[in-house]
Length: 278
Image (cartoon, rainbow, N blue to C red):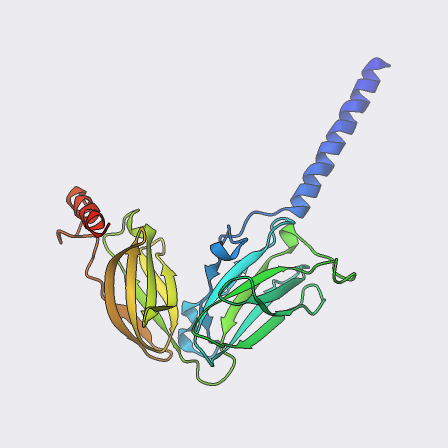
């Protein structure tokens, strides 16, 4: 009798553990590749796309999810005054999440607009006319049951969605910018590229794993700069043409001795340059 009771208790324990695991698998999912991005400080840049452009293959939709109940996703857009921009958020096929979009000014706190059509699994769109040159922040999160009793937020494996940024009217006004830095090392991967005009930032690109920089960028002439640990390492002037692909030649700023390698002497020279600017 005691033996039977022990088996019964063990079976009950296994059942409880199984239910917990099933619940966790349902509620939680692996973080998407853009995490952490739960604040404006960690917002990722989203690049412009134009479905009618043959070069649009350069820009893929960002794929996100709400992997847990406290997950929300922040992105940022570098905009030009008097231009119109559009954020489109669409749950992937068979997904049940109900994302809403909030648009914030460059302080990341002033709410300018929001949209939520209250239907799970449906596309959301938010368009705005830029009132200034600079960055806008977008917060994408699940609908809030406190404000809408019909809201049923879904997290985990059924919460994957895509997001794109486009210019909805004729004349895209942007091009594609590439740059490659060699030699490709771990230090190279920590570099950051930005663009400026009259000391105002207009674009940003992190170094990709293969040591390529990429960004879409508004047409015009800009200063293209590369920073290493917040120190200016490279600067040149570029001209971006509408729907054109621009490849920027870089004079290998990490390879200070010009031997095609990143070696000890280069490391010493870079730290000397950093020390001189302090």
